Image (cartoon, rainbow, N blue to C red; front, side, top):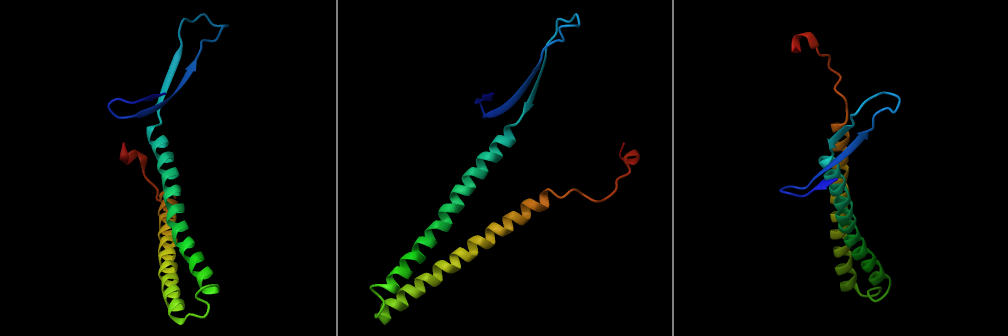
Length: 125
């Protein structure tokens, strides 16, 4: 269930009915706050959408440059230079985007590595 005021929160509920073989008049209802999980999934979907768009744009430009170099600019040195410069800029842009994506991936992986240090629980308590 999602509640929207004042800030949207999402909960998952589990209902446990009484055992019919036992004389009980109770029902157990447990709610868990899964707001962060839902928000995380939304962020991932938005991120993939944005990253796909950011990669698609330079790819489209590169494809256009290649078509121009193979066609209208085939025998045009000024046109070739223009399209090669544009292709170089877009290739660098894509390299930066891929590098950023790899960095984000490494950060996410490192967040899920369990600590290897030992802790004396008696001293903690």
